[in-house]
Image 1 (cartoon, protein in one colour):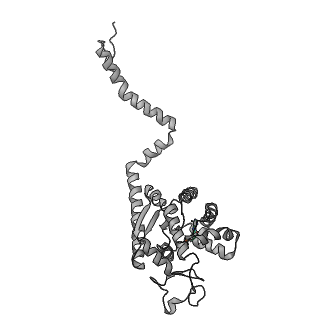
Image 2: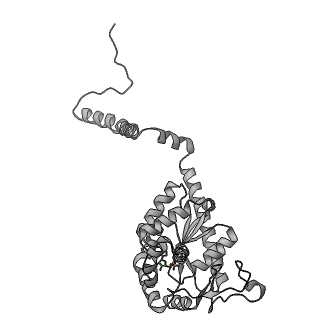
Image 3: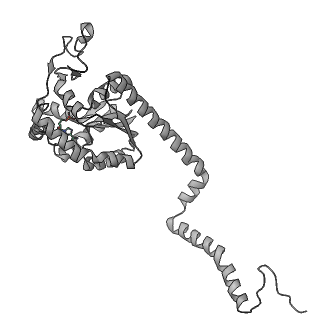
Length: 289
Ligand code: AMP
């Protein structure tokens, strides 16, 4: 399963990506998380990305693409991946296409999370992340569980909930503007490739998880249906024979077929109209003895 989750900041794609990754064992690849980790480490990439992240702008494409290329080369992505927060613009989407074609691992589906703007702002204001395990909670819509389940799997202690520095009012407004300008065009891009599924990402967390599962199931059923239809339309042997011929040979064959169809009949009609006697093809002239 190779999928992209598309949606505005606060649409819940990160939370659903985590749930899907836990259930399927396929890794979630969040460019936001990777960049935040780079900032926390103080690496060169982190230092270069920080200013754009703090102001809500997109980080330079070349930095993000280098990071993604490295991540997709890791062995845990062989069974698939869940891309969350990438691609973010048309250039990144085209680069992803190229990279996946190189790896012979095309995308299976793109799911767009639809949430009303007012709800996005409300969700972002309640969002908290565990500083140790990275799990995302929302103090308004999905608070951390209590009791034993409340313990962080990384430390064994209660989750240490933090608010992201870019989840403040001014930066959120800029991130939503950037989403509308740069990321929304990807909806048409993936729709035109027949990959897009749209889900209502509002309401209960479990209900959204169900809708995501249904969208992915519908998408894989559609893939199976399409490949079966393709197989039926062109039997394999004929398809291979056509493929084996060179383009020039195919063009010559096409011209020959057209010539066989039209020329003799037309020429015969012309001659007859001019009063000439035309023999039927295949009838021999009698020879005198
Ligand atoms: P996110 O956690 O996905 O909301 O991303 C947080 C911030 O990281 C964004 O506001 C951007 O500054 C940066 N970022 C994340 N993903 C990308 C990406 N694919 N391209 C450029 N910048 C990104």
